[in-house]
Length: 178
Image (cartoon, rainbow, N blue to C red; front, side, top):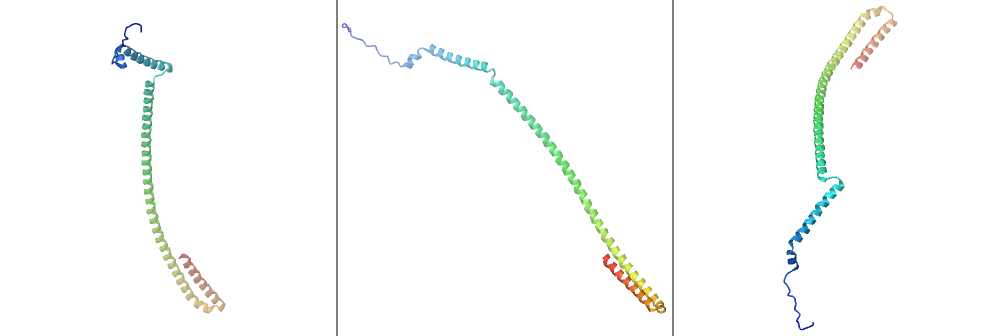
């Protein structure tokens, strides 16, 4: 301090640092514009370097997926229609088999009824035949008595034995037929 000059202090301004930046809006705008341009340029460089753009690929992949889904749903509809047709055929065939089974049951019942009737008729014929044999045997035995008196005793016992054998044979046949 040389002299007598008093040191003057600079007047302090009440301005903040943000206020000083606000005074230079062109500089801030230029920096922001440069950053935006660098960002856009970086994106273009990245896409050019990778050789593909994701939007068309996504669009293509989406369309391909939609086509696959549509094709799968069409196949599913066709298979469902085929299953329905097969199921209807199975139901029709089952109905035919049931009708045939009913017919067979009716025929079997009729045949069993006819068999029972025939069995009863055979039984009746067998008993009638046995009665005729016994009647014929008794008639023959009655006719044999006068002849037996004339024949020796030995012959008579053979005739009686033959009649007994015939009666036993008739009884055995009756048991078998029942």
